[in-house]
Image (cartoon, rainbow, N blue to C red; front, side, top):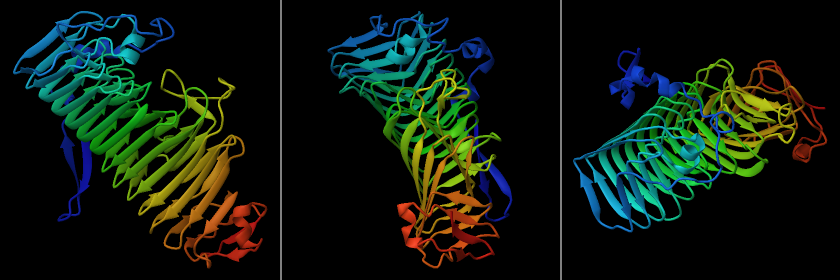
Amino acid sequence: MTTLVLLGLASLALGSVTIVDPSNYADLAADTADNALLANYWTDNGGPQELIYNITGPYYFSATDGVALAHQVLSVDANDTSVVVITEDSAVNLSYVTVVKEGYATWLNQASFFGVNAAVNVANASTAYIDHSNITVHDGAANIYAYGTGSAVYVSDVDLYSSGPVSHGLYAAGNGTIYANNIRHYSGGNRASSFSGDNPGGYLYVTDAVAHTAGIGSATFYTLGKSYGTDVVGRTDQAPSVFSDGAQSSVFVRVDLTAGLLAGTVLFCSADRQSGAELSFTDSRLTTLGSDMAALWFGNVIADVQLVATEINTTSGILVIANSSQVTQAFDYFAGSEENSAIQPAEVTVLVEESDLRGDLVAYNGSSIAWTLASYSSWTGTAYSATGKGYLGVYLDETSTWTLTDNVELINFTNGDSTHSNIISGGYNISYDVTADANAYLDGTTVSLSGGGILFPY
């Protein structure tokens, strides 16, 4: 169950609106054993790194066009078996159906990477239309899986419930695409994200959705490829709202996401550091619940972020962390270069527009954060390095303001207001690198700031 806190305009009292997800109607206690299983691909539950199964199920459609299943219950209780398989350039409609999948995956990497055991498996340039339906998965498997160039699934007015590890709600890989509207999803298992892509990249377009996950490593969006979320309410009890691995793109409009573990969003590279990762929020809200959780976290990646008319709420008071770190396979803590010497610092550029933000920027171990305030934005906070030298830059346009909460040392500082009257210092100081080209316009000068602080070179 997800709760939004709203301000009652008439009474000026806080009220709440409850958003219902499929867990409200499920017997969660019956799935306790499923949800305790961990996705240990490379240890006790490892296995081959290539597909070793023929994808099969009792409702199997190959090179078939125009099939429609309506007002039926479709089910199977068998290991390594889907319920509905749509493959080899087929087109199938599922309308007002109930799909129930029971039975384990022998190797969890087969379920996670290749969609084995998924309730509905769509592959090889096939198309599925699924509407007004309920899809339930027990024992660990995706609800809906799409794989391959030309494969597309159109989902509307559907409830998805899953238990067990790697039980993603919507799961696209190999350039497969899923378009979803009016979706509700709950998963209780480990590494069971609501809307997930996998390598090669998947494409997810999700609108008007409610998503709730309870397991460790189970994000609202796991981006490998491209994720687009519009009008989505999401809560992750033990995961970030967003995981993104590599040079992927995540675009969110009018979303309200709440995260309970690690950070609000986590952009990283699990292998060599890549450039080109993208993240944007527009007209949205992002909330983190933990005392040490940043809103936006970056490790071993080069990324660009845009925040437009977006609200960020953190318990920690940290907006951004950039580090030479990455997420472990357990997905419950960050590991640094002491565990992997190939990890490199993060390089992050953040553009803030039409937003009022409060919190700090923290750069670790040679990482860098370039922070731009534009289009009537305001920021209350500071920037600093922790555990090794970080590199910090702040850029203000003439319409934006910065209220300092501590002294700050910057590599680059650029201000579109030549008088610097848009800085409220509160007695704190800004120092800037006199040798940096970006600071040449300051000509090594010292400037008095509103509130008693100074801007000075070092």
